[in-house]
Length: 241
Ligand SMILES: [Zn+2]
Image 1 (spheres, rainbow, N blue to C red):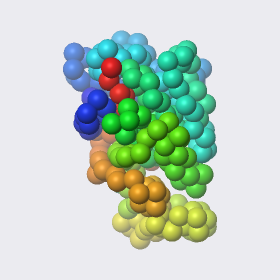
Image 2 (cartoon, rainbow, N blue to C red):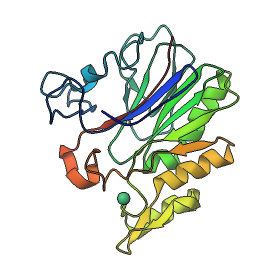
Image 3 (tube, rainbow, N blue to C red):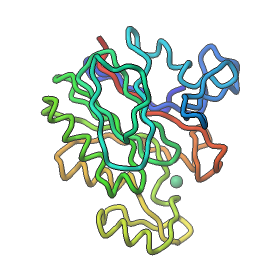
Image 4 (tube, protein in one colour):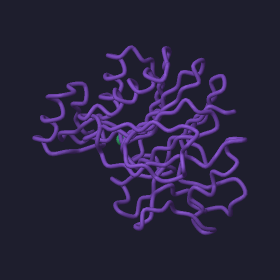
């Protein structure tokens, strides 16, 4: 179920993999994507968000985002009504409210100041890197009182796999030079994770990286590897009550 899981004081954080695991039959997928109608995948054959019930003791169902590859951040609190919110980052100072971002090659980023009890989650693909969604999320955490933020960068397509047209590479590297990369087969590429790390360095935010490439690791979902059939993994973070 988890590609990575950790705890810092009252903060729990995790990145999921492609398998429901646990009490589910072997081979049951864990796909945290949204269906065509915008509702999360759920049901016995593909439990989706249902599989997350009980993962964080005493917590509500995760706050999900309808992600649009932009730079906006939403703030949620105890008044959250359960709807999917349209944004690429979400922050909260409310305990018991897990935050979730979805990805299948893009970079899921979790943020936390455990002492302040403030957490955030961001989804950074190529447009989100340029739109500075992660710096915007860091600013939103700081506005909620966070002073010592750490970041966790989840599994994503690596800079040796993410091939792009040469002009696209130039456009992104003009804004975030650290993202410039080359594939293992010698063609232009982008390293979105390196770009996110550079943005966090600029802000003085220490970061941890789950060093697994979604395209190369069959236990993870990858749009590059599987195309439209790919599901979504998730980054999850919560201040446990
Ligand atoms: Zn790779």
